[in-house]
Length: 281
Image 1 (cartoon, rainbow, N blue to C red):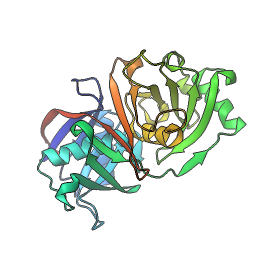
Image 2: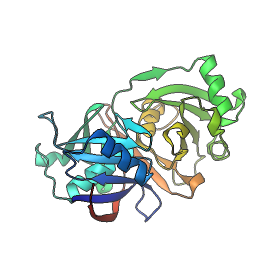
Image 3: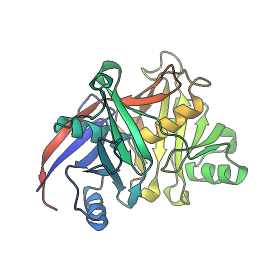
């Protein structure tokens, strides 16, 4: 029997964030067992906490969607860190830092307690960035069922999962998107639009479409928000801001982005355990 937690991420309110299934003490499970359990939970991500192989890490994390494994993902990182700490995990580093180090497919990721006690991860480096060419932009517009003229800007913001993002004229345009899931052709697309001051408690509305991962739209997405922050923070967005996500799915995710003095972008949010128990795999 192994301990299990399901953690809601990016919302302080029950059932309004993005849940992640976390399996503790997962050493000994093979790839097929992990993949089968991820398919069974049918959440956007299921994670497995293992003994680290890097001496600089506090734990190792493997992240699975219903269709395969990811090298990195944001809400599973925060939810898994929450579960590890709640289960009594103690970081090996400086206690004053109040942080942990996660080992995953993308390397070592720092997680710390930020403003208001929220967990936040340091945005990993982008593996692909820069402008989107005309052919890919045509594919993106087809998948989103929007016109090229609706796109204010576009960029690759990929930190592992494959993200490409488009900026639309405003948040209302983001909420109006009705994608064609059959037309994504392997793309993982983020859509971003700014709120006018006073319209929302957030600065920007974000949506994430990943139909080929078997989940359609992701409720709240840390990795996408990290990539968007590396693209837009300090230019079209403030260096520190709040992103709303999940509105179109009747969720209320809030992603808190902070740019530190050293330029590190921290992506944080509230975390809370909604289910805990044991499982037999």
